Amino acid sequence: MSTVTRAADTVLDRTLLGYSSVGHFLRRRWWPEDPAPDALAGKVAVVTGAKAGLGKATAIGLAKLGATVRMAVRGDGDAARAEIERAVPGARIVVDRCDVSLMSSVRDYAKDLDGEVDVLVHNAGVMPAERSETAEGNEVMLATHVLGPHLLTASLRPKFADGARVIWVSSGGMYSQPLRTDDLQYHQGEYKPAAGYARTKRMQVVLAELWADELDGSGITVHSAHPGWADTPGVATSLPTFQKLTRPILRNAEQGADTFVWLAAAEEPARYNGMFWHDRVQRPTHYLGKTRETAAQRQELWQSCERLTSIWSVS
Image (spheres, rainbow, N blue to C red):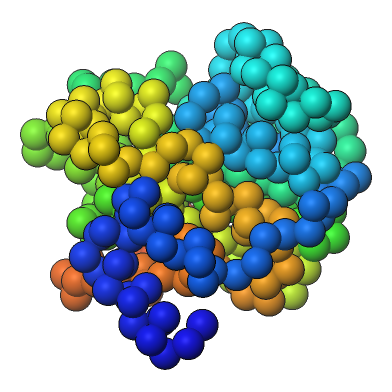
C-alpha cells in the first residue's frame, strides 16, 4: 500500500466513513488480493451463529473456497443450510446443534465433534433489550460473546489442525468502551444494550490477543476483526433507529463478512498473530487513552473466563 493510499485508508477509518459501503467500495481497489479459489479445499471450518447475517455470509464465503462448513447453531439450521447450498452448489455443509451461551452445550459439542478443525469463527451474537441471564446464571451477552467462545476455543484446542485459524467477530462499537473486569455480569448501573454489547466486544478483542499469546509457537493463529456497518437481521432488531438512519450506506452481509473469510483463507494473515482487522488491514485497538486496559486487567479477564467456564465442568 502506497503512502497516499495508506493516508486515504486512515482517513476513512478515523472518520467512520470506512465502516460504510462507501469505505468497502473504495478500499477494495487497494486491499490485498483475494485468497486462491481453492484455498480451503479439504479443510473444515466451524462458524457459530451461521443461520443468518454475517454468520451465514461467512459460511457462504468459506464454502466458495472449498471448505466443509460446520454451522454451530441453536435450533433448526436446515433452512439456512439449504440457502447456503443454493448459493454454493456442491457445498459441503453440516448443521451442528450448539448453544454458545451455555457452557454445558459447548462442552458437549466440542466433545462430540469428530475430526480436525482448520478454521473456527466466533460469530454468534445477541443484544437483548433487557438484561437477562442464561440457565447457568451468566449475563446473556457475556455468555454468548465471551465465555462460550473462550470455552469453545479451549475445548477444540486438541482438535485444531496444523495451521488452524481462530477468528473473533467483534464490532467497531468496542472502541467506545474500556475493558471492564469489575462488573463482567453487568450488575452495576442502568443496563444499556448497546453499551453492554460494546463492552463484550472489547473483551473479545482482548481475549483474541490473549489466546494468540497462549497459542504462540503452536502454528495456530488468532485474530479479531469488525465488519463495519452491515445491514443484518440483528441490526434491524436491536438497532432499528440506527438502521433507518444509515440504511443507504450500510454494507450488505457479504461485504461485512469479507474480512472474516479473508482472514480464514489468505496467506498474509498467517504471518501475524493476535491482530485486530477491518477491510483486510490491521487496525488499532484503541483510539482513546481512556479505553486502554492494564496488564492486570487483561490477566483478570483471562482468569475470570477460566473460572466462569469451569463452573459447569462437573457432570
